[in-house]
Image (cartoon, rainbow, N blue to C red):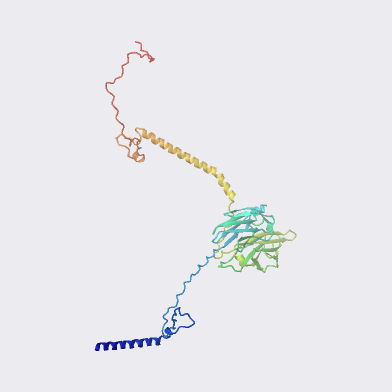
Length: 458
């Protein structure tokens, strides 16, 4: 009887526990068992809403558990390629005349040199402007340069670092030495500022004018890293070599960019005849007397960059009752080149036509010499071969046994023994010996019929 009672007590305890669990479940989750909305279809299942609770705020002392997003890699664009350097320089010579000019020959040359200092091939073009009494009569170019427009312009396609030159034939009028002024050469490169270089008409000797003597000392500038305006003094001396006093005057002609800024105290009067020509009146100069004068020159920045420069001084003496006499002398303004600047060659090279003609004229002579040498060599070799062949065929020649029966060792070293052509051939078969029984028939005594011989008479 105790067993059923215990079973019923256990069942009641289980039922109470189950009822308590269900009540707690319905109490904690009432929305899961809410009544459905009558307006909604009862056939579709209703899903319980998902509630998301925000995370609790982090304390100020705690670090956030989530790491910040990694920065996106940024790709930098490659830097633009560096622009290649574009640069050129130009140098111009003076038109120099010598003793032949005073005899009526006014021909000379003007040399223009250009250099490509950049990193790309460039074409440098230019033209010339000549002073009064001077004109171009021809010209040519070398090292890639060529003249055009009747030699009044030039064009030079040059690789980086290359130098090209243009030579212009110039004719100077007989009275051009009395005139002032200078010429210039303008060179330009595409999309690049042009460069202008000036040149002068200079004379290596003075005009043969008696009764007057004029000298001018060269002007030397100090070294500079960059061009700047500076001053220098030009010393001039005028001497009266005649037998009577004469009124003297001096005119200083300056190159472009140079100006006379101060006159000497010996000048009785001074004035500017033109921007590049200044006159100083010296008054009477006694016979045999010499008057020194110092003119202060201002050299501009552009002129300093073009040194060496050339100027001229004209001297005048006017004796009483006689025609005035005039002479001329030139002076140089020199100085070391600026830092990084090199002076280009301005010597006049030979014409390409002249070089070609000289090469062609000497070609037959060279060919004749080569042919003669070849003929002599052939005869020497032929003579040696013949001599060696004759010596090898002679019993007593070199390489044979001497009186002592020994071979000359020196001949063996100098002339090696020739190889026989039949050394490598197989030996020839032995021929059958002639049988001893074979004998020739005996001819009868006396002349043979038809032989033409007659028996000697007894």
